[in-house]
Length: 372
Image (cartoon, rainbow, N blue to C red; front, side):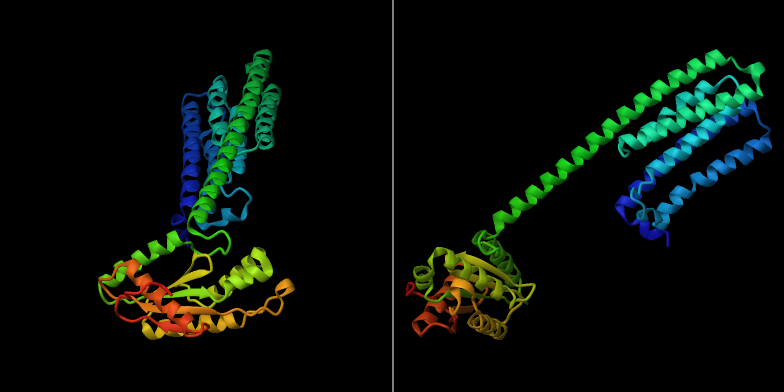
């Protein structure tokens, strides 16, 4: 199908550039037709039609390849080099047929070189320029052989020499422009990657890779806005590692970091893709359960409890078992985010008071007492 390629912005851009190049080919054809009409083109009308029919048969292959998506199979999907090579061949062939106005075509040729100014490497530019120089030279040889009476060989040699210098200069200038463009694209890509990394660092916890407190607060505000509109419910699990101070005392802070990382990884794996898990501070975590009723939140909290119990450590932490205490709260329309978190926090402390390694569902009223 032709239409799918037109939905790809890169393909559309390639097609536009190719059609622009074809417009240049159209200008070349019009000039040669004028030469034919004014007897500056050494061919009959029929020969002209056959020759330019061949030119255009190949010209039109390039946009067709882009429309069909076949161009994506090539190293350069823009097909810049083959288009320039064919345009060079066409220009040098017509030079042979033109009598005294060959310089018009030579003046037109830099347009072909400009077409590749932002795409080709130096070696590709040198190949194109070499094709043009050799092609013009061969045209002179054939003209000298077939039409000696109309050829000023010395003047033609000077034209060829000047053309060679100009085309070679264009090749190096185009290659430099292309190199600058690639360097700019590389720097832009590196800058974009750096910005993405900075954005990631701003919203994630460096140690665990989970969302950080700042980001999870934004998530809670978004969830609250959805819930306030009606027909939407969400919950949170306030999670705290039990006896984490003992872990740091026994295994050091490095061991404590490993415990936090492992617990974060295991808990993340037990949540849905639409849920959010953040390191809220120290050994505290907050899970935001989107579209979760009270029953769904309790089930999710139970999964987290059981998953943490099953964690096995190796190395220096071999034999260590950890548990968590959870406070589960369902959002009540109208309450503040801080009040919502506080209810879950109080439920978590109630779980610790009851013996840890368990979960407690927060009440529907705001707690009045401070944390235990």
